[in-house]
Structures are given as C-alpha cells and as structure tokens.
Amino acid sequence: MPFGYCLAPGEPTPCYKILDCWWEIFDVTTYLRSRLPKDVFVKLLEERDPPNRLNSILELVERFKNTKSGQESD
Image (cartoon, rainbow, N blue to C red; front, top):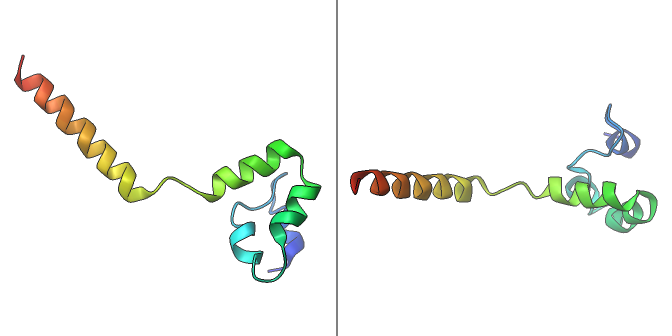
C-alpha cells in the first residue's frame, strides 16, 4: 500500500492505522505532526488507541452487577 493512499484513504484525514503501519519505515509520527493541523493529529492519536475490548466488557459486567444488586434491595 503506498503511503500516499494512507494519507487520504477516501477521507479528508489519514487512515487511523497509519502510525502502526509506517513507524518501522520512517519517523511517521514526526512527519504527520509537522504537516497536519493539531486537532487532526490529536484525533489520529485518539483513534489509534481504541478502548480495550476486554476492559469494556468488564465495565459492562460491573455496571450490570451494580444494577442487579440495586434492584434486589428494593
């Protein structure tokens, strides 16, 4: 996949995986930081690190347990 495609894969912003795919080839983080608007670069960093699926499931289980225990005491 050419780097140019990763910069704009049919969207106005780079692919969210661009840092993961290109870091071994060159300093892609510095390159993007110097060329992208700050808000776009920050969004790219946030999208790169999606919430951990296991942690999300455990949080849902905990919320469900708290809801169930609250209903039983009513």
